[in-house]
Image (cartoon, rainbow, N blue to C red):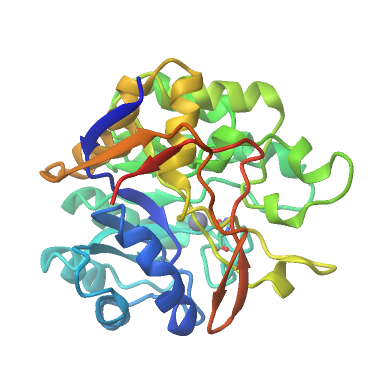
Length: 346
Ligand code: DOR
Ligand code: ZN
C-alpha cells in the first residue's frame, strides 16, 4: 500500500505551552489534527474555569486563520479544586476532562495532588456528572524505582480509586508498560488508555545506551523492549480502548541539554509520518484510522471528524527539520532513528 486515506486525526494529549512557544508549535498540530486535549501544566497551571477560558482564547489567537482546530481544554486538579467550579466548566462545554498529576510526577506538577483523599469530593463530582479524569499514572515516592512507577500506581492508586468510584471515567494517559496495557485490556468499563508515538518507537536504550540522549527523555520514561512490544500490539490491535495521545512536549534545547534536563519529546511535526511507519511495520495500516481518528472521539463521546486526510508513501525519504526555531529558543524535533517515507499530503 502506498496511499491511505483516513478521517482527520485528533491528539488526545498535547502540550502547547504559552506565549512564543505556543505560537511556534501550534501550527504543526493544527495542520494535521482537528482537535487536541490541551494539557494544563502551564506556569502557573490552568486550575480554574476562568484560567481555561483565557488559555483557550490565547490558543485560538495563535492559530493560523486557515486551520480549523478545536482545543479541548482541561483543568489541572489540585487539593483545593472546587467541585462547583469544575462542574460549571463541564456544563458550559469549556472543558473535556480534568487532569490528575500526582504532585512531583513531572513538569510543573508540584501543585498537583499529594493526598488522594483530599481530592475525593472532586472525583465524586466528576463521576456524577460524567467528566473524564485524565491521569498521569505514576507514583512519585523516591523509594519506588522509576521504571516501576506506573505499575505501582495502578496497584496502589488507580485500582483503589476505580473500586471506590466505578462510575468514574478514567483515561490512563501515555501508557508505557505491559502492566498498563493488560490492566486496561482487562477492565470491563470506564477505562481507556492513550499511547504516544515515541513510546511505540523507542525503548530505554535510546536514552542510555552509548551515551546519554536527553531528547529521548520523557515521562513516563521509556521502558524495556518487551513493554514497547506490548504497546505496539495494543495500539495496532483496533481495540477501541487504545488511542493516540502524542504527549508532544516541547522544551527549548538548553533546558533539555543540561545537567538536569526536562522531560518531553517534541513530536507533533512528524507524528503522523512516524505512526504510518510503525503501523506498516506491524502490518496494520488499516487500523491506523481507529487508533488516530476513531477510538478517541468514541471514548470522549464526540463524533469523529468528517474531513479526511491522505497519506502517501514516497519513493524518496521525507525530510523533517532536526530542530525548529521559536521565539523562546530552538526546539529539537523527535528523531525516530529510521528513515521516514510516509507523509500527509497538503
Ligand atoms: O515527558 C513529559 N513532558 N511528560 C509529562 O508528563 C509532562 C511533559 C511536559 O510538560 O514537559
Ligand atoms: Zn504530557
